Length: 149
Image 1 (tube, helix red, strand yellow):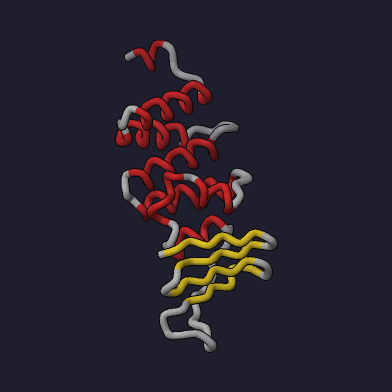
Image 2 (cartoon, rainbow, N blue to C red; image 1 turned 180 degrees about the vertical axis):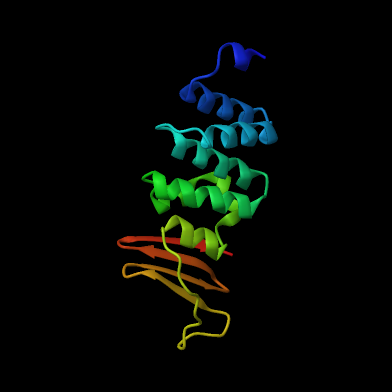
C-alpha cells in the first residue's frame, strides 16, 4: 500500500533490494528487481545486475545467466569484477557464465594437444576460456583468472 501512495525512486529501490538480500529475503529481492527491470530508466541495467546476483544466490543459474547477459550488455562490467563477486561463486566453472562475462558466445571445441577432458573456447581474438581437470582459466587480454576445480 505504501508503494502506491509514495512510490520508491529507482535509487531507493536498489538500496532496498540490497537490504532484502542482507536479510535473506531473496525471493522478495528478486521480485522487486524484476519489477524495476521492466520500467524504463537509467538504472535498468543495475536492476538486471541485481536480479542476476539474487538469482545466482538462489541457485537459479539459468535465470541468473539471462539477467547477467542483459546487464553485461547494458553496463560496463569487467570480467574480473564479476569473477570476484561472491554471488556468482557457484557459477565460476559454468562455461555459459564465462562466455557471458566476457561478452561472447562461441562454440566449444576440444583442443588436439590436450586430453579429451580439456575444453578450450576462443570467445574472441583476445579472450579464451580453458577448462580441464586442474580447473578453469580465463584469459582476456592481459588478465588471466585461474580457478581450481
